[in-house]
Image 1 (cartoon, rainbow, N blue to C red):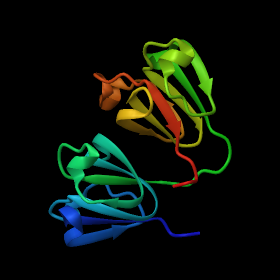
Image 2: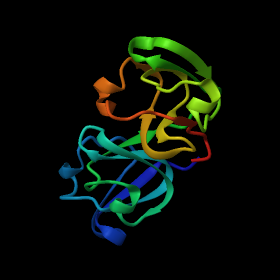
Image 3: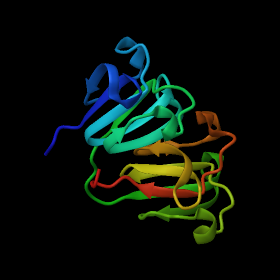
Image 4: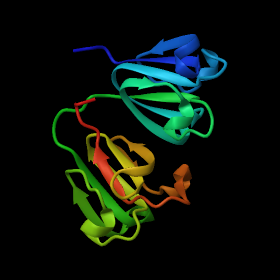
Length: 176
């Protein structure tokens, strides 16, 4: 199996100094003065426009990303998180309210519209039991996203997503 690798570049179109990693990086500034493009050799990563895995997130898989602005980033890439491969089942429980309150639905597959499938107008907390997931602010896997790995997420608002409503979700499959 290929080693998971991402290469970051200071300038757009893979120019300038570069930094290669196979793991999480909480602060790119220790390696590059800025990061405006990246190339994923193998594997999957989340890239963030703030340090410590905060701010806008963008999912990247094998391929070339020549300009951070085309990825929906408001600022250059400042941190990244490697997404480990998951084999096996996927399970997530989504809740209408914070602290696992209100309606609850357990999902094991992608959902292109939480509102249509579950009649839930809001999803404010969740518990990821198995696998790695992406939550999207719009139906059909569009808009800003949030990466979720196994664990409990009691309040999306307290995580910095108070103004966002999550309307669809997708499993991160081995096809990275």
